Image 1: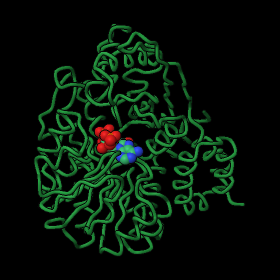
Image 2 (image 1 turned 90 degrees about the vertical axis):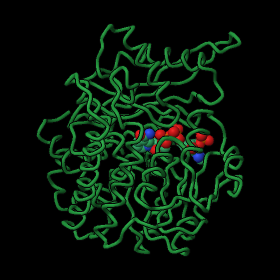
Image 3 (image 1 turned 60 degrees about the vertical axis):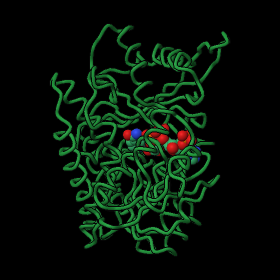
Length: 444
Ligand code: NDP
């Protein structure tokens, strides 16, 4: 059995009941096969893959808080510090009832390669809790965030581990968490990113993941002699990533005709109205059923269905494993020629393989959605400098980073005889830097 297969088997055996983590490890290691085979003796001697798939540490803790009826509620908090060979751990905090250790490990593992791809000095980590902010009052969210940080503060710091937002963790939650960190430590430091603009946040961070996704798509199309103008896009999700992906796509001359949330989806043949969407999701924190009230010609459907709509480009921006094999088949049958992942691992492995076999341009999340973490790293830079950059400076740097990411993955794919396979390209480009740093730093 080859080294890659041995390590995949080991991960499955050592981490039972963590299917998302198995999936992420398999996807990465299988696409590194050529690189690993070419350097097998050294990598085996160094135990490099075994070290890569084992987090530096995993912190699991109780998060008790009091609800509005005076009852004590208990959630579980997680922080997985996966790998800091190229910089302090960096990754978001996910607040969603589906969160468990395996999901945080899959996200933390992916984050290592994503952060490496940005070219910036940031390691991989991720955290979260099974707390659901939906339907909770501001006071309840504050109570949860305060309790969460009262334990987590021991393990984070501006040069140690810098958390950020993710599903369920937006500006409000980051503000509450940062406030509690500051109260306990007395230290005013750039320990979180995604902070409010009045206390160290970066302009363009809110837009960064969605905008970055479109910058990468634009470059990918250019490199394949296509252009984004006048293309029809289908988008899933209606959170931070989806909203700003739609906005940038429209600015670049494309038309996004769908969006979704966990209850249903909207089809607006004239193009999703971003201002209406922002009002519903960012201001009212309401469901997508509201959209039709402002755009009567649009359609609302319960359940899933975004990928059945005819499009040129598909942008999954909601959550993991939301684009299945049957969806990939529908996309190909409808003439879709590009898929770029705004969310983390939204496409199942079988769906990804089907898209690649059918020559669909496929940009994996660790490259396509890296604009968020890249801009978080720019927020860290601004905090260290005690300066704030303009929106235009951050946006221009973000665009340059996304263009560079595309070319690093394209070049890596070309070097290993996998031209056009950006899954392989992104994993190899991300891995090379981390592996070199790990081997240079001895055994840890
Ligand atoms: P938000 O919480 O702002 O939005 C998430 C969206 O996805 C919402 O529309 C939500 O609907 C929907 N959603 C969540 N879970 C499910 C589900 N199980 N089934 C269907 N829809 C679901 O999160 P973000 O936009 O920030 O994140 C979206 C994705 O992008 C995640 O995978 C995240 O890890 C990834 N990402 C985010 C970055 C960022 O900067 N924010 C950076 C890089 C990656 P509902 O409101 O009904 O729950």
